[in-house]
Amino acid sequence: MLIEACQQKGIIPVTITCFIRYEIDPFKRDAFEEYSRNWGQAIPRAGVDLIGYFAPYEGSATTAYGVYNVDSLAAYEAYRTRLAASPEGRANYAFAKRERFILKEDRLFLKRASAPHAEWVRP
Image: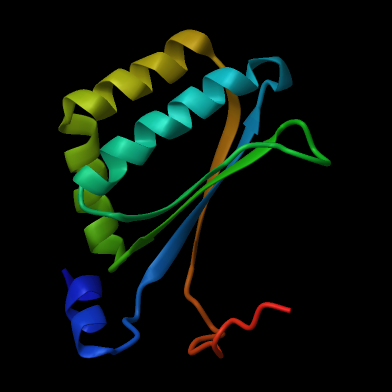
């Protein structure tokens, strides 16, 4: 993949990041967290650089996110096909449909505008 090839050469690849914003049932946060852990296994196996899933902690009790990098929109479409065809993907989609903890889901594709970053300095 482009990401791995660029990392080996020390080049910052031009990728897009998918941000999935979820509105979840606040009384079913545990189900969303299980769903997130399931994607933590299935998504990387389907060929995408998963950054992570984020559940409510403080503030909103209903807003959650999933974030991952993909090489292009064409790569995203191919990944979605692989994920939907995988046993893990089918099972997790069915879990979400059965438990109904996701009330709304929106996707946004962005490109990083701030790279390269300085080295992180901890105080």
